[in-house]
Image (cartoon, rainbow, N blue to C red; front, side, top):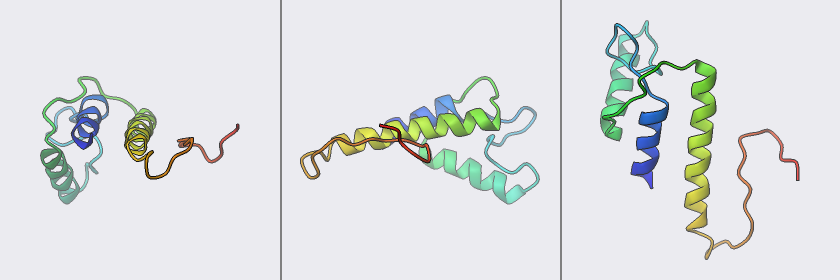
Length: 96
């Protein structure tokens, strides 16, 4: 599951800044940030990235969605330990 989660992050969210060799979530003015971000991608095993840049707002929304899906899938495997209906949301409130 974690591998699939990382693959989705790489393919749907991460892109390499044009003219640079660092990912979109690195601070462009910090060499350390760029090095750390690149190391994170290497540790995650990212090999495929988005081809087109996306805005910071889109990046955040996609990250929330991908992470919510991962957590939902993980909790479904634990249903035998904590049965019941789970609701996953990135919103501040849930309207039922």
